[in-house]
Image 1 (spheres, rainbow, N blue to C red):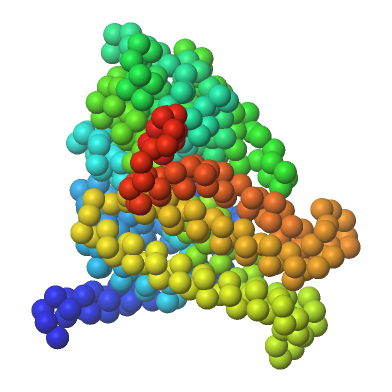
Image 2 (cartoon, rainbow, N blue to C red):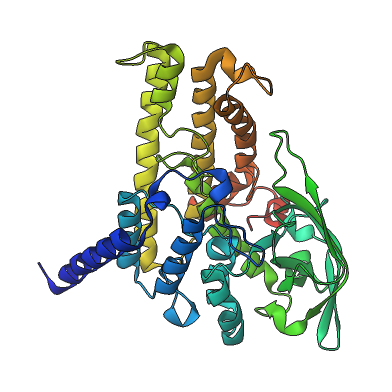
Length: 417
């Protein structure tokens, strides 16, 4: 064994021993919704061991294992980060922290932020002290994101922000927001956008939850009325926010693609929303003991398992290949598109497994699990919309991966450009 392989083998032993010693037993059980750890100024820990697990992982730097230690991370290289992920899966460890700061904002701050911004925000993200939300979509600017109209006017040392956002995930619970604003109306729309950070407790910020067809309200309308934001919170160059926005969307799409991974659907809270074994669920509802009796459903589940395993391996390969590049790229659109379709298939099969028990919305004739599956089946339909629609992803794949020419000029105005 060469020296590098020996170093990695030694790291695996160290990581395994540390996890065995420090991961509480309850943190090795399947996640339940109410125990998801989002962190933030107003974090509530339903399970005290969730706080213990977060503190231990944050102290080790393993909530963000690949980030530099100077900014609260673990300083691990790609190989070590993969090994740590494998060892966490081996003991079925729950995520110590679920955070848009980790999955989206942090990576672009590392790439585009100045030293002071990194030092100010990244350690707080890694420790779970600040919960972030994303201010992108507006009532008239969804896929055509570059048409956004929320404006930021520079007055002295501050920007005055006015406008609104929509579909802002957990805005009513977030502490800070990373936001796209228009700072120049006289140039082509892509060229007049900036990326800025500010506190959701600022005067003039308000939110209004949106109830979905599933019955939950994870999204909000968000309003800005003369919100004063220090100019030092501008990330990157003035009017160059579109470059950062595109980069962040690549990270977001990579995160969303994980919905389709074979281990079970992971919602934005990182929890297994339903039983991970579709086959066992179907057998239970049909009263089968040895094998699933329905050959058609059995065939669908088998094909789904094969596709899920192939997707998981492809995702892993993409992660390993990114060691040679500069992080996510257009491949994230391929993963996002397929992962979301895979997750939708999962719920279609689950609904077939439930049969008539999947028709319930409320009432004592249906179990809590049945009602949850039905609602999450409805929720899964949004997978092909959020983070850029499936149509947008296909445009990206055609343009950035296959190298096909633009057929319509307006395509370059969309969210993927």
